Image 1 (spheres, rainbow, N blue to C red):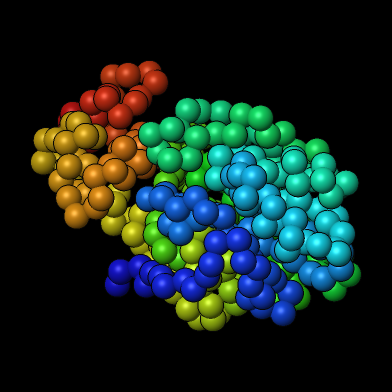
Image 2 (image 1 turned 30 degrees about the horizontal axis):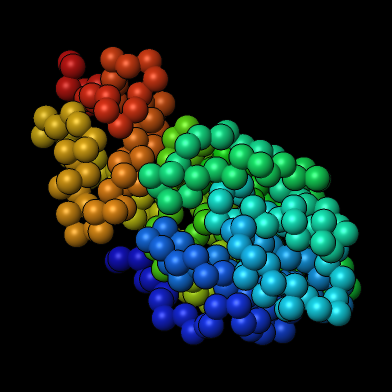
Length: 303
């Protein structure tokens, strides 16, 4: 079964939409092959509110957020991870609101311009949070969930009152996510997928695109997300077994139906799989610090 992607979101840039009893959303005008229609910023609660992933540095977007928040007090600015489409507006928004920013930490900074989501090198949270931390306001309670994989410092946020998960880039309704080393880790990503699946959420609210709704559908969706990664791993092993050693050559065949603008990201995800296979003792490379230009082979092929 293929991933049952959810697409067709209805929105207007800068408009605030009430998408559930406790959640409003404002979408930034930064569409692209990695951001879909743009960054969806979530406002939790009424009166005293939390804001999740304020988005890119944009005067028009900042003005839209301030208009959406008029008459309310922002008590928390939460960030799933420090990429340029998620965190740059976090500190300016927190300063405007007179509150603090909350995230895990700064992560492992790597240049990702070719992947469409370069690191936000200027972002450092005021408060570092992780598993077990709880943030709250009038009528809302948010659980911090560590979900390393897309980045080492990625967080999801669970909204208890609606049994919902703000999944950042960890799980997206419209597409799979990029797991790009060294900040991304495929083994950690697979474990984090299972961690979220076991939590039994009713709804996933990704930062980009449509929500995934319904407890059974959420479980199916995450299961197929994981199965997709397992299928990619199997395809990589098949390429290696056939004698291919080059990641770019693998990507050209394995992603033939994918927009070529996404091939650099695909190559990084394949590298993520390779590093996981190396860690598990199934693949080897002569390079001490493997890259997409390294050569790889199955360990069994040496016997």
